[in-house]
Structure formats: structure tokens, C-alpha cells
Image 1: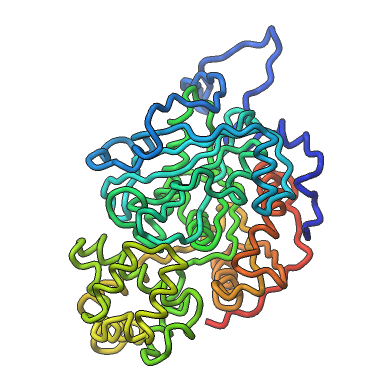
Image 2: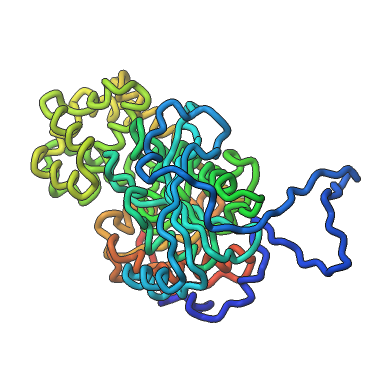
Length: 478
């Protein structure tokens, strides 16, 4: 524990009655008027939605398995519910036990929670209608009404359908559940094509952000009665850390407003340069052994190439960036293996980096990076998409906290978080930093989740942000 403001385990009763960005139901006496209209600055009025009664048991009748069958159901309002299924209903003691078992014992549960599996309408980055599945955690007792939302960006799980996080009964036990335990409504989108039809567009900043914010709309549609408010926080780990940092940048353009108060990128995998995740090094060093390139480089490279080609060029082109002799092997592994197993398969089946990327494609992308002749074909199309997908941070947007383990070898601090911080500062956002000298990619979440929850609680209510005892990051080396 390194934050000096307050621990989540402390008494914060004031926060439970504070107004969050989603608004709260004003206190009124028996003789106070109960208006059904609000006066605008120009003297005109608009209807105020009538607020119903909170329920953590929305009217869902589908089975859990049914939410993944969404073919032909994409057209409709963004965020509208396609299907939903009630999952586990956890009393407060069970919520506490679940968090304790997964490393979030520093968070004190103040309410029970209901798990809901859902499918909702959203869009691809080119505007095509699609459907994303997700898991929501609804608190039995929200901290305010309308209930404030925390959007959760999950880590990379692979893009094979069975790798969808929502297929776990209680995903994000130490990432999403702690926020529900404190009275927030939390949602973890799988993102379109992961679990349902289609293919997940891995590391597509604009697509993931659209689907994340449509998850907030889905929560508002899921629980009837105008009792769900706006998203006040966005917290993401690894791939999800990059998603929520992009959400900070794109919130106004995506939603037309700024409701987020705080964004936390935890060991963020944020695509901001051709050098991110060692991508350029993979292209420039084809003879290097795959197993020595790093813990993420090979997996990230093939997933991003495949997701782009399937979604932009068509299903039959998914393997076009892979060497012809390796194509079936790599595509088969992507379509069947989750992240850790996929990385092991690539190390064994494609022992050199040249076995991962077709030579012509590789040289085309490098020509684009270097600004030399040869920037043509499929490689040029990919490069133009990749660089066009980079985002610019919003100086008027939500405040940002970057949390990073300095022993992380998957998303190394000097290669990723430090570079993201430099970008944020250059674009007018001054992030708060919290580091842990011994935390790895696998342990940083459990070591810091209670501090992250405290920081979001403070941001959501306008309280002074907690400060971190260790704020040292190395210099960006990419």
C-alpha cells in the first residue's frame, strides 16, 4: 500500500452519499416540489426522466450460452440489449471472500453484487453495426442514484472464441468486482468478435473505445427506470489499459460529452508508435529467435496482423501477412489457443521472427516506417491503418493515473508505460504515476487494486486525488 490519501478499507461514509458524475437523486422534504421539467438557461424547459427503483435483477431470460449467438442481430440503437442472462448473485460476504481469494483483500466490500452476462449493439471502427458480449457486475446497493459506472478494459486473452473473458462465470474478480463491491456498476466488454461471430479487431483503438462507451449505454438499457448514470471512471489492465487511455482521448468525439472523472492505465499496452510492443524490432530482425524477442512481441504481432486483415480485407485474407509455409499453422493457433498457449506455440512452431511475417509484407511496412520506396500493397494499407489509429490525449478530459510494475517483462516500464507518459505530457495531460519496484505484469494488479479503487473513488467525487509513495519511471527507450 503506497497511497497516502486513504485506504479503501477505511471509513468513507461521505463518499457513499456524495454525488458522482452520473448525478444523484436530490434530497427533498415532504413539502418540496417534485418537478417533471427542468428550466434551461434560455427559459425553456425539458423533461426530466422519472427515476425508478434500483434493482440488481434486471429482466433477463436468456441462458448464458445464448448471448454468444448474435448473427443477424446487430442493427439497432447503439447500446441496446440483444440478449442477457442472470449469473451469480453474491451476498456481501461472498463478494469479500471472492476478492480476498484473488488478491484484492485490501478492498472492503460494502454491498453484494449480481453478475449479468449480456450482448449489446455497437459498431466496428468503420461504422459497421456489430454486437459485443460482456459481463456486468450490478451492486445490490449502489453508492448513489443514478448509479455511477466504471468501465473496465480487460487484458489480452487471445482472439479464439473460447478465450472470451465473459465465458468465465466471474471474470475480473480482482479488477471489476472491487468496484461493484464499492457501489459502482461495472462492465467488462469482451469486444465484438470475441465469443460471438466475427473476429476481434485486436489493438484497434477507435473500435475498442466505441464498444467500451457503448457498454455504458448497455448498462443504462439493462437496468430499467433511469437508475444508471454516466461512466465516471475507466480502469484497464494491459490491453485494457491502452483502451482506457484511448477512451480518455476520444471520449468527447465518441460520446459528445466528458463524463469520465478518472482513468487508470495499469501496465498499459497502448499502441502509440510502430515501436510499441517491439513491433518494429520484429520487422527489422527476422533472424532473431522468436523465444528471445520478448514475452509479448510475437503474440501481439500476429494477433494484430490477423485481426486487421480479417476485418479490413475479408476472412479469406486473415493469413496474408504470414509466410505461406507457416500460414496454416499460425492461423490454426490463433483460432484455437488463448494468449499464453499461443505464445508457447509460436516459440516452438515458428522459431525465428521471419517465420511470423511474410517477407514482402515486412519490407512494405518497413519502407513505410522509413519513408523509402516500396511502401505499397497490403503492408502499406496496414501501416496507414496502424498510424491512423493513434490518438491524441485530451487536455480537457479525465485525469489519468498510470500504474506500473518495474519488474514487468511483458509490458516493460521503459518500453511502454514510460513512453505513454511522455506522450500524455507532450499532449497536455499530466498523469499521476504510481510504480511498484518488484511487481511484475502478473502481480501488479493484485498489489495495487485497492489503491486504484481509492483513486477512482476520489476522482468520482471531486476529492483530492491520493498520491503514490513511489512515482519513479525510467526514461522511454523506444
